[in-house]
View 1: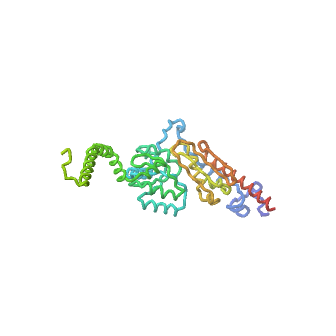
View 2: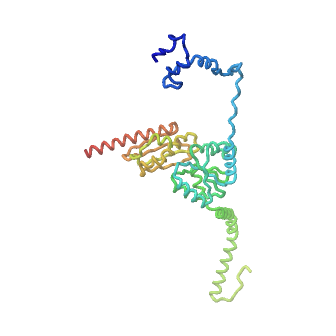
View 3: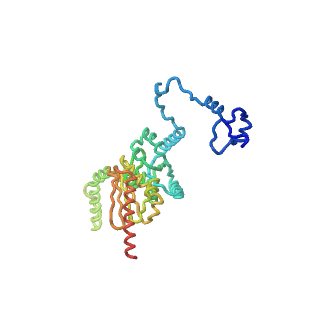
Length: 249
Length: 111
């Protein structure tokens, strides 16, 4: 190092940069910041990236109208399934669902399946457009927070209420049975109704009541007369008299 | 459920909670969310003796949450214009206050 002295200005006359740099300078890759060679600096400055700019700035161009949100295929499938379910079932009950354990859900599903009731978890975003276009428009305000649908091709209201009584996590909010929207109390009243055959018999009996009363009224006179005549005959026979022909013949 | 885990209500001093609402009204969302948070298993685990009852009406009445505490106090929250978070924080603050009072009473008895 003493023989070479300090590199740079002092020894300009005999300056072999390759030799001197190798002997005195640090390596190419250093732990400290090393000044770039001037040629390298010039090359990098020349080859700096210049971003392409459009001739007309984009803010001067007319703004594109916001595109409509693209329809999700999965949402479409879910909506179609929901429409089919609503169409096929006679009873649709909407219940408020509080989170419960998986095995409880499975048990509830099992007990409902025994009475041919299907438990369906629904998403509000999928159900809202379906309901708005169908006849269940009144059920729209029910679809807030997590809900669960109990659908069935028959209308087993009594069994459904019995099962739901044992499950506090699921609360019945309202139902649509046979195209009639019912509240919770309506469902309870519906469950207390007698079966179709019994109610048909009751209707027939109520309708025929008046006509049967009329016929009994009309028959009361002759029936009374016949009873009196029979009594008279018995008395005559009882006193041992001759079998006279009763008056009136 | 996220709100329940954030607010962490301790239901020890609560005897019963009655949630009354009419589902066909439009102002019941916060009450229903409150009900969902109350039914979370962590909150239920803090007090298994607490009875949570849901009363579903159809008379157009306002949603009401009625909380009965073990020492006879009663908290009535009308959920028509409250959010679920507000109701939960109100309940949590009162439960914590009552818990602290109970602890202090216990400490005074057994010094």
